[in-house]
Length: 505
Image 1 (cartoon, rainbow, N blue to C red):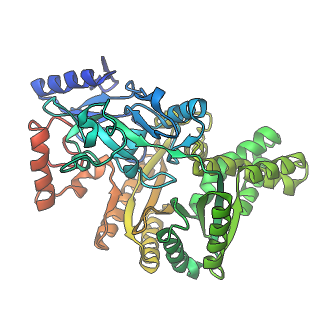
Image 2 (cartoon, one colour; image 1 turned 45 degrees about the vertical axis):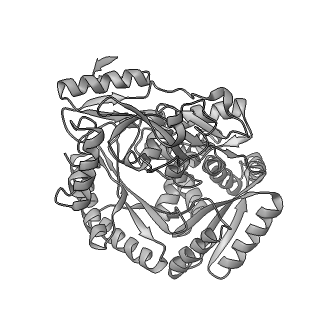
Image 3 (tube, one colour; image 1 turned 180 degrees about the vertical axis):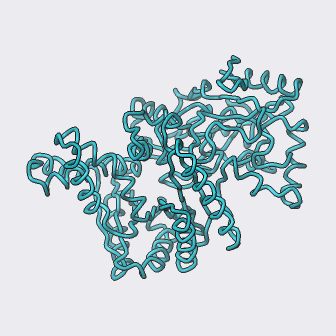
């Protein structure tokens, strides 16, 4: 269970909850802190890197069981999963055994952990992952095993896996972006596969329409016309999301190479993502409900943005037609764009994909690498992601300030706004650099620090923090963080579990 990494830090790889208990008790006895990771693919936020040197990595990836696999059904749409269960694993299980159910997927790689992402408050295509998870089982820093909600009544209780709140205070919140214990399993909500599902591509007519575009999409979310997360990406993000798929199609299907490949890929990108900002949303439900919702979206956005809809059947048919005519350049360009778009559309329908990570790898010449090996690539990735109010004019002003800082540091920011809830937005902003370029890496980090300082100057904060941001995020003289440290001491009196991440030592 104990192995050694290249930098000689210990790594513990438990395979069960009881193993985790033993690891915690051992760490408490020898005073060496534990840094839990699920699959270690939290790229852009620190991945496997602990906040403090000298920590022992607690790698939970071998804990990958779906504990109630034989009980999942449309009448019981909950999966009880360990932290090593990945998006692809759960998706494959549902497709094989319960195809009428889907779940809230994220745009990260298919091999990423569901529980790990939820505990760091990741956002999926259907909504915040935090809202999908309840009934947590965790090992406290004392070695004690606790369950939240009604799981404390035992796994055989009829309400253990269906009632998310329990009786009395909810301990769950201390475990999200917290380190009061090591989560060893959780209840994860599933959803019926919609009878009808459309994806919407929406683009403001003019740059001056962006604020109003945001405001109208927020209204549609609040009124439950659009219930899934709507993503609004700048052109850099939209084109980056399509680059690998377009290039692969032109290279592998059409035999293009070198200058001809680069020229046609650039042309296809321009045609596929021509707008400064593009929104991607989804409508789901019965055919009549979806038809009515589409009409309402079009009516609300009339005069502000264009609206196009597509589904898998429409995309597949269009791609077949364009592919059949690929000897003709316009058709070839269209087929390439459609080939790149289909995996991204699959995310809105609950199908995990490596497309987003593949695009990053492709850009840095590592397109042959599989997505789960991202850390072996030359692609450096930093996220600076502020939470924002639902005020379009304010949001546009903040984004303009961030873009100016990026430009001053020689960085082209890839930016996406996610309408996460009825009351808030989050911006996903990433900086890319070549890891082997020392100067580029240093410049990117200075830019990230400047962006964070700017965000805080506007009275905002990031909704997810990188490990290297902890000193800036956690303020020891703050009553808020000091109180959290006192709460943590109840569950982890020796400060064994991940000291420094979202807590005060």
